[in-house]
Image (cartoon, rainbow, N blue to C red; front, side, top):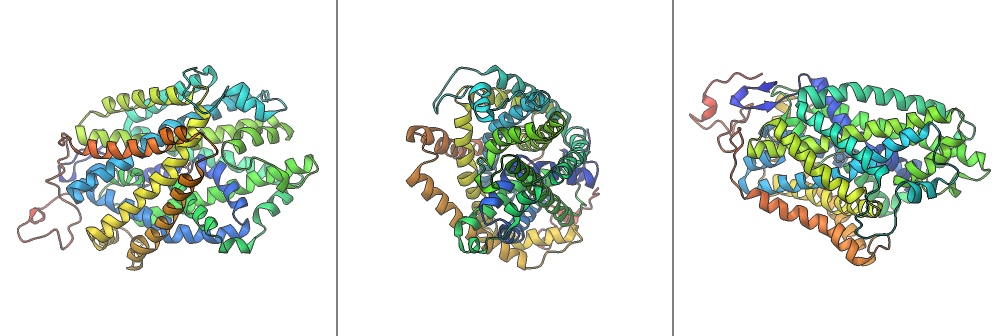
Length: 527
Ligand code: PHE
């Protein structure tokens, strides 16, 4: 096991900076990049969407990514431990974030299981002519929103495989598990996906697809919803305010160039997103061309319908269907899996930190519990609806709340902003000016609050997707409430972890830590 012994701590660490960067990219690049970005951009102003997107990236995405890094790197713990070290009661915010990881992880795994099945279906295009009926009725055997106990074998079996793979990676830990998997899979993903994009842009009709995606509709810029879409895409996509980046930063060595790595991660994630937009819309242009219709007349351009209904139909039309189908669904599996392991290590390492469990015990218990819940809820005939509902509430309400709380508590209530900024500057080459404080303390939370009010209002007034109210209340609000209650309950037990939350030495010492003969007066060796 690789542990940084600095300050007598017992953390698993990345063996090199590139390991951290690849792992962070692995977490960021996921299903959201492939199935969400292209459709959202198309619906929210096309080429003009790049403006709110870039603004959101620069004013909230990167600043909050740095905030996550600063917390985890300075306080050297997963979200609950780091926040507890900042101030005792704030530990519950850490559990709130960990709870969201759990909720998202259990359904995210199901989508990877679908993609795994579709990878195999690609070889013979088993989805046939009517891909919508195949997906909903033949594959998922979806009936109606409700609580079904009828398991669907075609989903349950790949789902078991996904959870076993998660178990193995978690048990191997940070250096041998997460780091290795990402160093192999992320470059592979970029190459496979680039091949797919090159094929797509050379298909007839591709130009029409790209025109549909990139023609700017400037009037969209005056629409608040478009701005909200941009901010929410950036949050989900960069995996920020979930506690994952806090945990990853805590696995970094103490001397690590944090902000420069963050810029690499953010740039790689957005590049992949734009690459996916180009690939997906070229393919859609080709598909529309085959049917002699305009791209605008196509349906199902985002989310699960894009990947599992529209895309299979496109793939069947492409020359070399089997190969490109396998490439597309293989990419989806890899992108999703590297994100899933980040979600799950967020959960298992938080438990390890608090209860001092061994890595293996934590890995087995987390994979077992999450796996069983995931199978019970999402591989039944009502799985599709539950997934859709939980996804909407956990993301639109949960994560936004978490980001607002983090910014308000750290910057305004506890006034730790400047200290965190100086911490990052002390270890990094890309220095943050005071403007960073303005972004994380004012611009980002203001936007997030507007977003939360709008989202909450819309689900309260209009419900969601016309699902019955009891259903959205149970699964949608239910998951948010469950996470909030867990946040409080998990804070109550005392710490049994190996790294004591109370006698902790932050490094490097900043003026506020060194008080006379304080602990920093002692000489430390730091790796
Ligand atoms: N960023 C991932 C994606 O784009 C999803 C994710 C969200 C992963 C939150 C981890 C945490 O799909």
